[in-house]
Length: 205
Image (tube, rainbow, N blue to C red):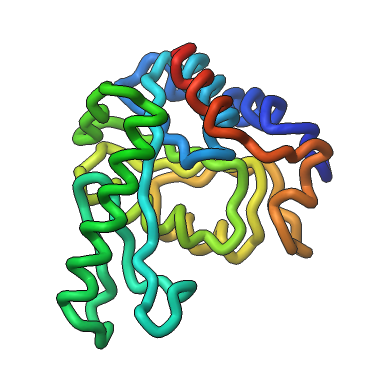
């Protein structure tokens, strides 16, 4: 297999590989927006609740593209040896968290996030490119003491698979192409996923 038709096909193929977890106490955690159409059929097949994870990097004051940490709804992670004023970090955390709460409410309404402690947590995206969002998600999930962390993605470069295999309990990936430039190049259909689509998929759960 060299290409995946679309996110729906990816979801079915990943669900086949994850079937051993069916009926166990777990949660499927989708990274929006592209991860949601992949995660929704997996959650249904495994009989697990579907959650979205909203987290965002904290950019360096001199270079916003350079991540110095990450913020989720109730947690924060900052690189230890970074020489940035505490006031800047605190202000960024507050600003980012407010926007994350808005986003979570948009996607999930008033539903409370599922507690991850002692659950099998399957983190799903539509592919790994730089891996920064996924890495911050893994680190933030780990702080909630799940029983197991599994990363399930349709496509990723070999370097990312190596990195995440060392960090989590299991990595399930359909395609690991040696010449990797972008996630979209390994899909026949790779359209943008809208907020409306995400909301609809989450409401069907």
